[in-house]
Image (tube, rainbow, N blue to C red; front, side, top):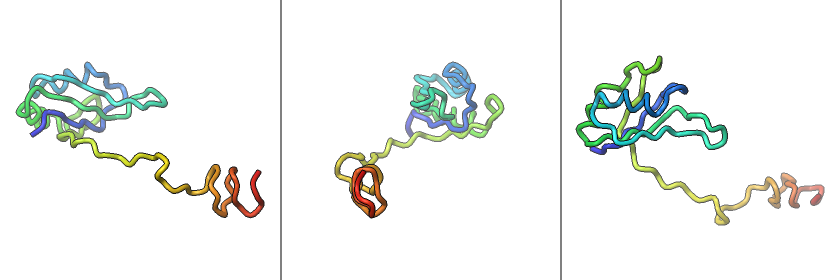
Amino acid sequence: MENKLFVGNLPWAATESDIRAHFSQGGEVVSVEVMMDKFTGRPRGFAFVTMASAQAAQDAIAKTENIDFMGRPLKVNVARPREERPSFGGDRPRSGGFGGGDRRGGFGGGGDRGGY
């Protein structure tokens, strides 16, 4: 079992120190990473908690899963490895929007009325 936990359904007001204190019930907490929205700077409602050992992670799951934390029941699981996402570089066919040449008439040409 892994040491890293996914914690979902976090209240917006939960801070890193709140989460650390709550998960220390299961054992030593190595790190807490609250995920933030890159555009608004607000919390996204989930975090990753890394415990000191696999046993501490298992204990933390048992003691915190579906338990009320600041008014919300937490969802706690072992974190899965990050999946590879496709890159959206130049290898993707264009769909027509800005500059596509299909019949929808994007700004860059195409369409039935000609380019702008």
